[in-house]
Length: 131
Image (tube, rainbow, N blue to C red; front, side, top):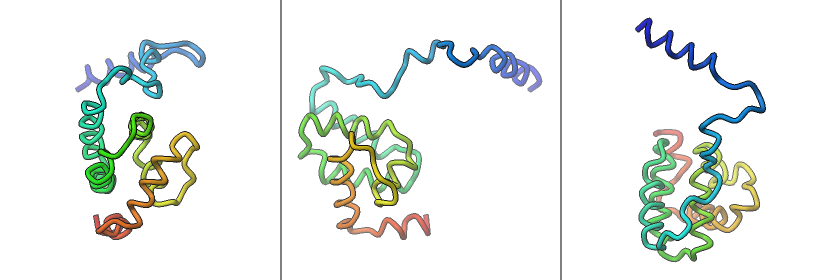
């Protein structure tokens, strides 16, 4: 256990100072990484990512949303939804419930998600309260 803590401390100390780039900076997840991917492959990937978010509330909400609406998305909407899924669960959940204003770059997909949540056969607020 002591060796693990020592290794973690050495990694922490070797972090660069502000302004220096690290190896991980090359992996900017906000940039599109699915260029040239077929629409059906992208849809399958997005459907899986929607159901495996980490928050049970988002798993249920986004999973049901993709089952109902993803097949109707255009390529531009698929890419917008892909970018949306790269955001944090808390942000997505707040935008879906209308508790926070979504960025303009996600306006189309978030408006469809909000409409789906309002017409959903389950009550999202109840899921949040009771898990």
